Image 1 (cartoon, rainbow, N blue to C red):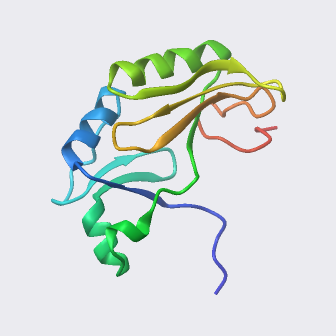
Image 2 (cartoon, rainbow, N blue to C red; image 1 turned 135 degrees about the horizontal axis):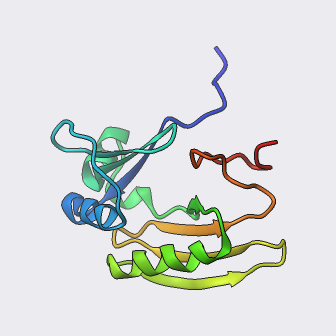
Amino acid sequence: MIMEQRISLVTLGVADLEAAAAFYEALGWQRVPGEEGVIAFDLIGQTLGLYPLADLARDMGLPVEALGHGAMTLAYNVRDKAQVAAVIDTAERAGATVLKPAHDVFWGGHIGYFRAPDGCIWEVAFNPHAPLAEDGSFRWLGYA
């Protein structure tokens, strides 16, 4: 069986489940009512799950130390350049650390980075070459 080209769920292993959830709620996200031990936020076409780091390691059969911290970002694209700074400001007020404020980049976009209190790094980007669909969904080269 081939794997369809999609991601259904992004799970973040976090040290403090409620503190991590409070951060995303401060950004304006709403929890999905659900089972104890995991907190989910439905997105457009996917779900972001928060799960205790120790439980995630146990589920994988690894010690917590073996999980490391991958060199990756979660990206949130916006509809216009000014929204990059606005989202980063909201994240900072919610407890994030700004790693790089909103700035123009060589390829014509406008981006910035913040680290959420749970340690995950987010990129906020305006990409004039990939406008969002009306519902906010993203496609690499935009929607024709």
